Image (tube, rainbow, N blue to C red):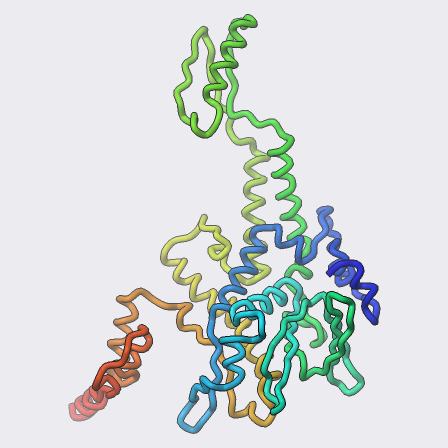
Length: 395
């Protein structure tokens, strides 16, 4: 959102962070760097954390279920499932929509989508609204009102039922706060470290070693030595042997202590960003402490500790806006997460074997889980668990 849009708003921006965010400046930090959602993304760890969470959620299908006495039955033709899995609006795929909504919440603490309804009162379109273009107001009725300013400066007012609003860590129940807003000092420090490293490469002098000799070189010897070193420049000449004569000695220069500390601080920035977004450093492409076993555990933790709260937040926000109050007790909206923990073929078939033998699943259900067509007689459930129980009772 640019500065011009601030003056197009019907009401002033009163929050200092929001004002600086709208102006594209960013809030100042002690490191001297200004931080907002756009600037923070130039830090690779932040960009990776946001992308990992948003992409993971966007790739998951959302299902609508009807609660019955026998359990939950999927309603694949329900208009909400069609919206969220196929075509939310005229120009976006379901993946694009969910990705944009999650990025808004992760980067700015709030995500908005305008809900359009057909003549029967059913939602038939979800249109993303940029968070910087929306103002939220608590009305005297105790409900929320929304004011949106489009790119042409036109104002629109919406009722609470017309906006899908997803918040993150709200203090007042009205507006959320993003990790970037709350932890901007740590991000500012990471940006300052990144800029320091870049300036060192641009302006600093860095040598890997020095030549030493007790004798004094003549101008001709110095020119010959310089010409010889020219042949060793460039990545294509790496590790070529260097022939020295006339008492010349090569002394390697190691990494200075302050350089090593700078590298450590860069790694600490990754850990800090991981804490902000409650995600393992492994998913920020930091494999310094990674093994196969802890990667498997990190994948489970990613679902339970990182994604589960986001999925619950989205499920409840969607249900509160797209399912009527009268239908909400009997309708459930859930993300399908089984593919996130999809095991190896050997592990999956071991689970299917146990499920079939104990009558939990039939062969065709297992085949469907593997995207295989059903086979004749595959709808029957095993009764071996009954026979086993009777045998144990007799004994």
